[in-house]
Image (cartoon, rainbow, N blue to C red; front, side):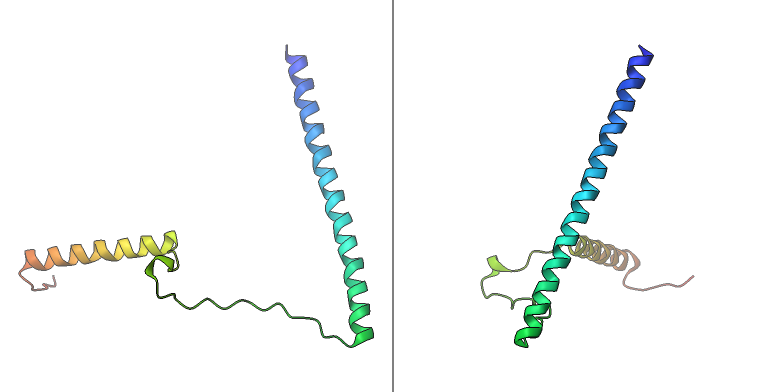
Length: 105
């Protein structure tokens, strides 16, 4: 029983290692191909005096007039708003209980 289990575990480790190695070879192959392509692109740019386009970060779009099309809030923004609301409720209750006076001790 234990011997077959060990063999299965060893076979699984070998399989995972083979998959990892194949993935590394694939990535290296694609990296080399992209380097070759970029070299060809640069040669064309040099030949025709074309400047390389710089990657431009797109600006955030203007807020649409339609409220249904507004930007969705991130979970962090929602949590910050909820915390602010909780703080406001606490502050209101504190002022009600203390009679609106802040007492330092």
